[in-house]
Length: 97
Image (cartoon, rainbow, N blue to C red; front, side, top):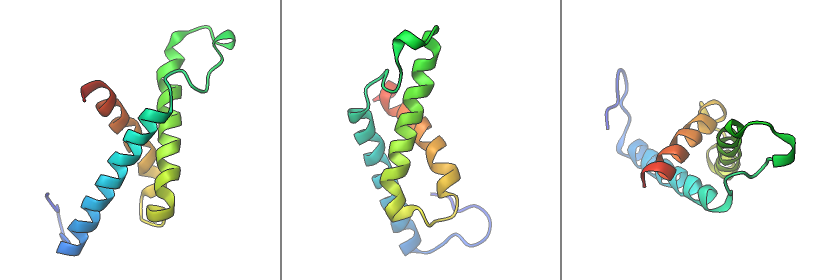
């Protein structure tokens, strides 16, 4: 891990971050198992297949954010960062694992 500029934190901070990453990955994995591709769409009302992936990723991001909010929601950047990070992790976990 690289702390960057300034205070790089403590051992407790690193342990917290590792716990967050484990919880985050578990939440994304759980969402991938629970939210079927195509959820949230009515095929009779759409005219393009391109909406399937972003809709699915949005549902996963919402699910992950809600799952983590009770424990991590008060931390800086949670609301802005978690949904986009969940989308990226879902793509990685779905396509490469």
